[in-house]
Length: 326
Image 1: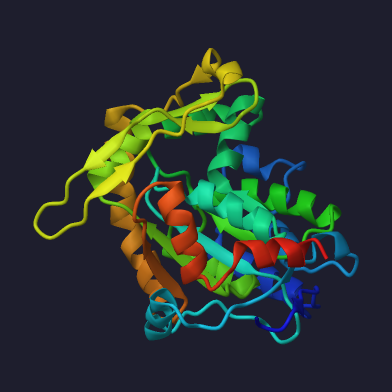
Image 2: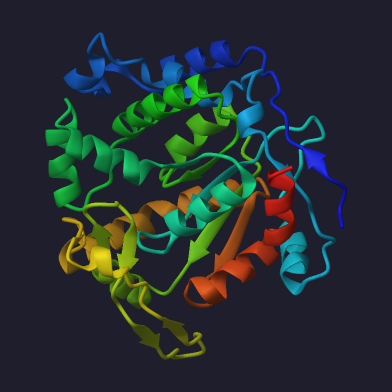
């Protein structure tokens, strides 16, 4: 078993000045909506730095974890991609990004890893939905964008993210797993200016499977948990793999409270997939060129995919849980 390593926060000198400079050069003021320019809203790039400044009192968020030796075929494949998850010798927490098409399961796997590793899972999709339900200054503008299946602009996403990061800073969070950000090369460049990303995990499924998954998604209006009523059994053609996924059904007390997301219609889902595929390749290439991109083809549902993902990431669920609790 690998040596036990404690994840501590580290200081990042000059990060504020670098972020201010990036804000001036990357985000032109005329692109911001009036709502974003209000006196109650933090400047996008100045605020987005708040997560990436480690807190000296972040012991509650510090993660303990172990690494297994690289003996699996998945780890061998990682070596060939030059993106084995790395440990900062100074003890910095995980700083990972999850990419993937809408419905692929980024939130599911990112949240599981978040709990396992003791770092916050920050999903920009959730931030958008929270703003939509809040009747805040951006809610009407976001509603129009989401209902058309369009991508939310860089400025709005960064603004929402900055608020979440500031809240996390006050709680002493350190490290992160980002889900749904960055979606454009511009966003990736901005993120690079303010912090070091250790690993980018690109989850992949065939498009016909993604469509079925999205149309089967349900949310409990009471507890907020996500479920999926679709039974997926897709036979591979022209050399592609078979994929079977059992439904993720709710407990009896949630059945009568299930709702469908307003953007989970066939027309909107297809448009979202089209836009994502159009925008994602440059982002993947951006991280691939840095040796940080790990492609992971999901073999099936959670029971099949979760152990394989841990294996590919060189993590052991039982060891990491025990270490995190130490």
